[in-house]
Image (cartoon, rainbow, N blue to C red; front, side, top):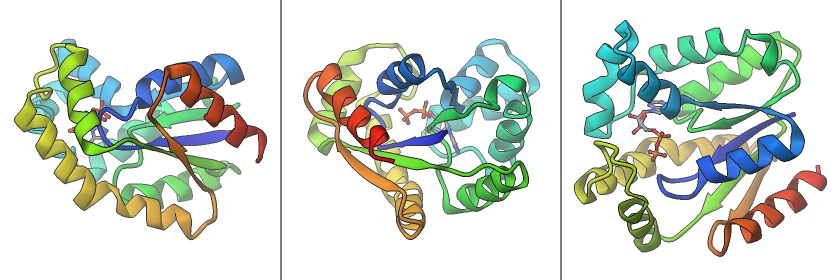
Length: 186
Ligand code: ADP
């Protein structure tokens, strides 16, 4: 089972991804985490994307898709995965679907976590992870990028009939219970 966990910065994708992968024994792929780890380890990829992450812009589709393609060739991904932060553009979605279909797989479900903007900003500012892009200005810019470039991904998968909207407010357990209900419905 392949699940896309979708939503704006601060919607709780990382937190819910952890719950889903433990409960359903799926792999977890977060492109944001992969980039942050590359930056931390000062790999050539990390050096290339460091200023892009700090600015809140998106890393180019070519780089992201190559990274995901290489990573998902590993055995741990054969039973399915929660994709968190990917795909983030329609171009990434199209290439992603083609890649999965070559492997006889598909995206089974897109869970779209919704939280209002005011709460998103508060959540990110209070999570205090020390991320260089987690300033008020940085978050506002990431929300803009999300609205302009990432939201169209929702329309793209809506046409395929696999989108389920999840209310992302309430406790972590509340949200996870809603997610479990949607997964058992497929
Ligand atoms: P958030 O959801 O809080 O914005 P992420 O960890 O998903 O955090 O992403 C952090 C940053 O990493 C993004 O602002 C972007 O620069 C880069 N990034 C992550 N995933 C992608 C992707 N699929 N395409 C392009 N850039 C990405």
